[in-house]
Amino acid sequence: MKSKLLSLLLLVSMGSFAQTKMITKTGKLTFEASIPAMEEVKAKNESVTVVLNPATGEIASLALIKGFRFKVALMEEHFNENYMESDKYPKATFKGKIDNFDVSKLTATAQSYSIKGKMEMHGKSKDIVINASIKKTTDGIDIDANFTVNTDDYGIEIPSVVSKKVSKKVSVKLDATLK
Image 1 (spheres, one colour):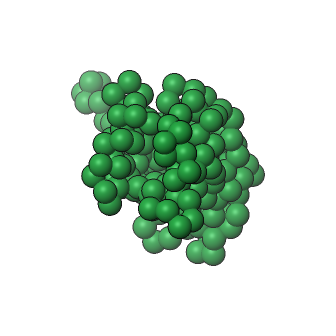
Image 2 (tube, rainbow, N blue to C red; image 1 turned 135 degrees about the horizontal axis):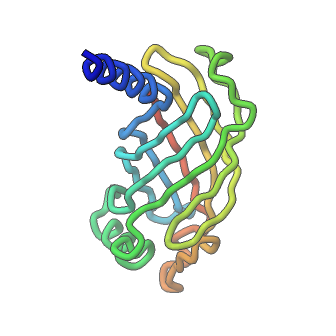
């Protein structure tokens, strides 16, 4: 009888612990490094993991580099082999905290938040600030963020032969619904 009661208590406590974090494994991360009047340099990864602790505002995300898809297969190959060296550096991560986050104050109207944290990519880390719109929906919490990444900050070299076609300032957009 004691072991059944202990098992039940353990199961209940594990269930409540699991509810403290919200997650998605289907976040969308899009980046664009296009230069006007040149071929579009844009890719999307629709398998980005984002985890949020709603009690503290701590947030983390993980994107596998080989998960980015381009319209042009050759661009994708060059991205993985020459720029991102995705066999050597297979992922990009972000760990941070949403400033002044209070999950109880979220509504269906998006509110602006600042997220401060550390981005790690291509073997380099950098502190960054991301502006995000966050709102509560029937599906969970929606996070939409836009920010810019400089390739030089992460040691990503753009060969001189294509330097006039690819921007070092990369626009990044995140769309995620956490449940």
